[in-house]
Image (cartoon, rainbow, N blue to C red):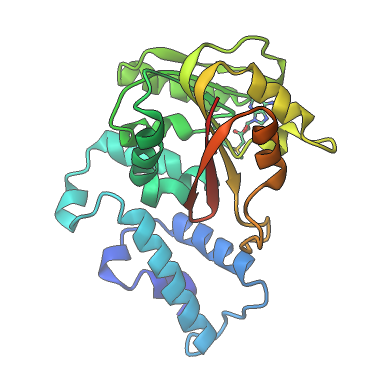
Length: 256
Ligand SMILES: C[S@@+](CC[C@H](N)C(=O)[O-])C[C@H]1O[C@@H](n2cnc3c(N)ncnc32)[C@H](O)[C@@H]1O
C-alpha cells in the first residue's frame, strides 16, 4: 500500500486532498532525510503514517469540533482554508491562528488599523482575528495582492493591499499594529541587519509584531530560536518586547 493511501485510511482523513497529503509527506521527508518508506510493515513506515496523520488532524481539525461542524463550513470558509494552505507559513499557523491573534491582541489591544508588510496570503487569516481592522498590506506578488483586495471588498474591510517593494516605501500608513512576519531574512540579504532596522524604524505603529522561523530550512528545530541581534536592537532603540512562542515560529510583540 502506498503512503498516501495508508494515511487516508482513517475515516476522518479520507476526504483530505491527495495533493495536500503529498505536501505533508514531503515535509516529513525533509524533517527525516534518511527515512526509508518503501515497506508498509516497517516501523519507519508506521511511524511516518502516525506523524503525518497527527499533523493532518491538526490542520484539518481547524473548524472541526465534530464532522458536523465541518459539513457546516461555508464555501467561503473552505476557500479561505485552501488559500491559507497554499503557503507554508500560513499553513503552519492554521491550527493556532485564533490563539495567536488572541494572545497578540491581549498584549496590543484589538487594532483599529493594521499594517502587514510582505503579507503573502496572511490577510486571509482575518477571520481568526475577531475584529475587523482597517488593513494595509504590501507584497511583491500581483496575483496575491489582487486576491487580497477582492477578499477585502467581499468582506467589507477598509484599507488596501498594494503591490510594492516595502524597501522602497518612504512613508507607511500610521497604524496601531504592524505585522512583519518572517521578513527580516528578506530584508537583510547583505551582512548585518541594517535594512531591517531601516524598515522597522520607518513604521509608525504603537506595536510591531515581528516573527521568525524556529526551524531551519531542512526542517530541524533551531537550538537557539531567539534572535539576540534583534533583542539588542530593541534595547538600543528603547523598545520593550514580549515573546510568544508557537510551533515553528517565534513572535516578538514590540512596544515602540
Ligand atoms: C516568507 S513569506 C512571509 C509571508 C507572510 N509575512 C507570512 O508570514 O505569512 C515572504 C513574503 O514577503 C514578500 N516579500 C519579500 N520581499 C519583499 C519586499 N521587498 N517587499 C514586499 N514584499 C516582499 C514575498 O513575496 C513573500 O510573500
